[in-house]
Length: 245
Image (cartoon, rainbow, N blue to C red; front, side, top):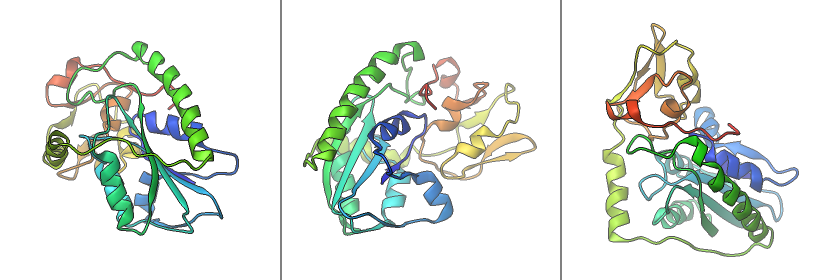
């Protein structure tokens, strides 16, 4: 079984490449909405987690899920953490979270993907994404081989900088700057794809009904009218959605 969390499609892209015949692909956002946290692995079955790094640590969605997760009969657990640069302490943070649930993280690796962090800086246009996607395809084939052979791997490390950036993640999760401009047509896509059910349509327009969110950027990147903004800077920034999403 493979658990995945994705905002713009990169981690779903990766999870699909790692999926083997008969293996279940499980959306972590759906599990949170449904309160589904109990699972049983088949004899010898690998248990995978695929998700992006946020602020050099694990997304709040992942922490919330893993803190309630139970997987019976899990003999081999691996993680593929997608990123635009590096994962730093995310692997070690995940390892501790899993250990608290009686699960051992046997293998963790980063996977370089097109950058989608447009909330914080200008990202390359979608036209520049293909080389990274092609390289990711090759890397995923290698990772799949490692998993099939049940290899062990540890990557990333905790530094003072990564710990400081990770600590800043909670401080940056405010939703106050999100809004929809006059381009919004009230399609409701943002509400449907929000993994934490933060967005609700009110009078045909999205409202962020909680003070914080994971900052997955699904709403802003995937809005078909580019109507959703985060403050004033995102008006001039590129959007990114994985071409398979």
